[in-house]
Length: 207
Length: 93
Image (cartoon, rainbow over all chains, first blue to last red):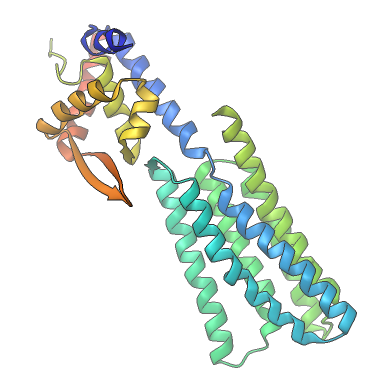
């Protein structure tokens, strides 16, 4: 092994071999950067789906809208879980693509936080937060898909966008039914959970 | 005809630089995995690149574990670009 390594260093390469080394390493880096790239989608997606089911069932059974406070569990569970997963699968390389995606979600996260704070400060009806969260996250997921060049991740969030508009139409008509809460869960399942598992399957299998 | 940069015209050093050109930064473990070099040999080649100011090396600790992170410098980027241009000339591309 040691000898092979010494040969690797001393070997005189032809021009073609040089280009092969360059291409091979760039390709390997591209593939490695995708490993565990679906983790965040899976964590936030499943957390939201679970809370959506719990909230929907609780509101439906008790007919008490106060159960909507359970939505606050999304960041309470999501942030520590996301941190734990990222520590467990800490990347050994930071690509430009990964860095851009991280910054994109940092901005989206701040926008989501501001949304909650502004709604609270301006005393706006909290129910409207949900479709707006869906719109913001669908834009974030689609943009991620464009950056990493994955058509499935780019186009699936449109389902979330449509569900958000449907929820808004219900709320504007004064219909705050349990189905609108379930819609949040379905949207997150389609636009975060599926792309997350798809990305992990695609790149982790290659690894 | 223009000479190929001898520092980059080595399989292992070229592999290291190619990885770093397509990344913001990469740590030692990643470079070792991808190049399949031994830790000793990789350290020697990283040192050569660092001495030429082609890459920057940062040694930190993560908890109790030491971590070495490498990234390209502007000098390294220019050298790599020149190297690729020269190879293309050799190959008439």
